[in-house]
Length: 195
Image 1: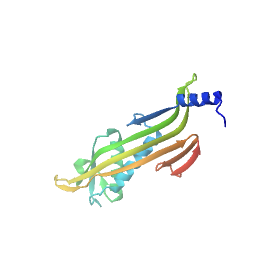
Image 2: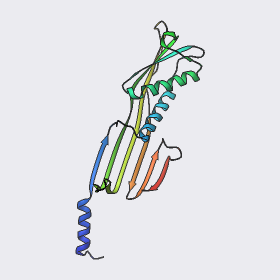
Image 3: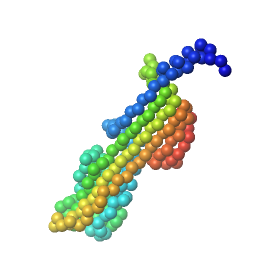
Image 4: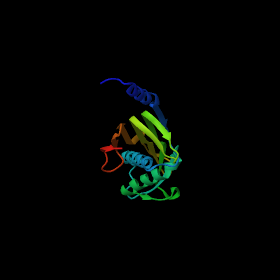
């Protein structure tokens, strides 16, 4: 193969227009379906691992103290559902024999992305065009919580150690071939796709 000036020029153009982008995203406001699934999966897994007080046939109330207020109601509903399954009667705190307090220290998403290739260029119609040589996207949903319980006199009944769970979604792409791994989309735990 001979290196003609045109081939050298083409290689230089590709080399000069390619770039490397690494971005790390924390949480986002308006959540996408993937973010919602990551969060709900991590919440459901964490709640399933919580040790519950003995509530069979007893009146129980649930309170939530959370650093993630947007997710607190969902977490509380999940815990209430588990208490009902264990035979408890969920009532208001004033009527309860046992009050369960859920402490939510984390419930959110995080994402990291590595991109190497021709960066996306805005087109006149509002779309963008880029050529990914290599792309890695990792999204996670994390939930960390623990539970405390007291009886109607305020006496301590139970305190659990913290539990932490996650959901994951990953894409590994080379040129136009993508491999996806995830725990959130049914039937799509691992697949290969042409993007």
